[in-house]
Image (cartoon, rainbow, N blue to C red; front, side, top):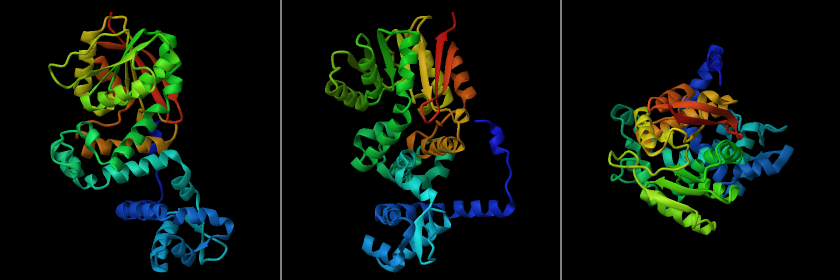
Length: 361
């Protein structure tokens, strides 16, 4: 996405309105959650052009007309609902439709509510210390959210994995033929393979390939279970390790895959990880990096979502990483002795970038 989009100016009166949205943002967010979870937004949609009154909304949600009124009025102010022909009734606006029906919005919304909302109060402290201080809402014993994943309550855990999978899985169908058409690996190392979704899709795509999933022990345990459940337990193996551990050594393979993994690390850590990769492979081994780069997005809403996700990394995940721009990530990989050989952009509906690197000859 061209930076020119951020140079456009708006009228002062509109800028002031945008500033008020930010000032009241936390209250607005929770009001929209209440409207959704109480079933009021769905009731407004079902009412069609006739619209829904405060009293009808209150009856539907089993709350007072006062409660329904304050929620609908802030929704009106945000363009989530609009006045019907009668000013006493409300119809759904386009923004409200996206809150109800758009998968990306739902995934982001639940993730922010269940993972980020309470911890975001510690954002300033996280920026100052380089530590994910917001993570303490889930307990004091973890340094990163990845160590905590297997122990999170079921609601937050479900929202985290839904968020993670939505932003990675959606590009897999387009990435598979590029990886296997370029190099046809017989043994692929999936670093940060998480629950083995990519590994399972690789085995379904190519009946000969073997995949090793390298990740933290909690994730590899789940990956092993999922591989077996998918019928690929004989072709998918796991390699528990912490890639940031100075003593960690990675296994070799015909190709290396990292999907939405490097954004989990600071740039200096990215370079350190790629040096470990370099030590495990030979000069002809392709290293594939799949990432949503915020300056390679088609739409500003997608770029904004990625910029906002960086704040999650700051206060909840690890305090050090972010969603990267194309050039800064490329330079961090190249600093480990690699050269970019192929690149594909705008994969999937979320405009993923697939970058292929090899060691300098």
